[in-house]
Image (cartoon, rainbow, N blue to C red):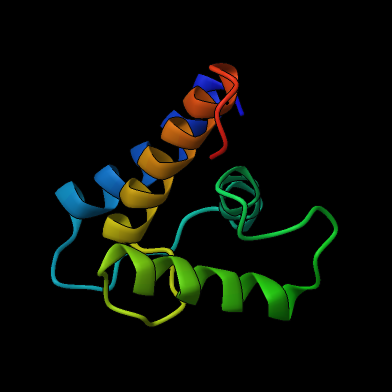
Length: 96
């Protein structure tokens, strides 16, 4: 995953948080969420849509977030951070 993709997810989450006027913040781009979940090892490439929701809920539970299956600002930020850490560990030859 590139830095640009991480900024896309986190930027969308932050933009929604900053500009939110009491309305629900739209979820992150589903393609980016899929890629981040794959980076952290919770989703295999080519997974069905139902598996994405399950993987997102598992991530939210493990991260201590509200388990709602929606990639809102907090989930997107935590997911991007976890994916970055997992990639770093793999680059060092350590299991993620």
